[in-house]
Image 1: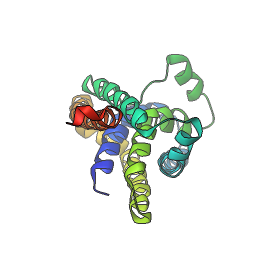
Image 2: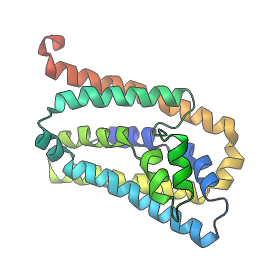
Image 3: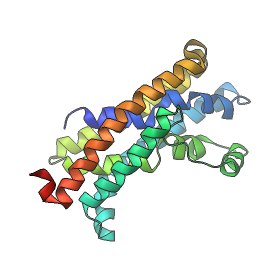
Length: 206
């Protein structure tokens, strides 16, 4: 297991791009409420990634979906996310205005919308499942779950330093970072789709 899954997940989750959302949703929170939100959203992101890694393939098997088909579909989803990022939009920000408004008035917004769908949505889940199939040993699977811990820590760090980051990078800086990660994600998406297409149509690999 190399670092490609980690790079892909960092590109998709991209907690820097979610910093403005975090500031918006927690602007009226006390320091304790903000810290609680950071902890819950970071832990929830880890749970989503770990669950997808450990159970994702079993879910595909239950529904009778081949991994090759899932790779092509997941690659298309990643490419769509990459295109959004190239337009300086968060990869997973798919909530409509009504969902965001409903979430914003709840007691806790840590899970919805911060974790799902802003941080870890369908693109993240499908990516983890695809890489879980490549994990052949216990240690490789452990590394994949461990990457979930790194993502959670990166999320916690970005949220904890949200206001300094927003002041330092500014809107333009965050947009540049998002576009850069989107370009990397687009290349990875093409690779995932090509791998799935070769499995579905072996003649393409000749």
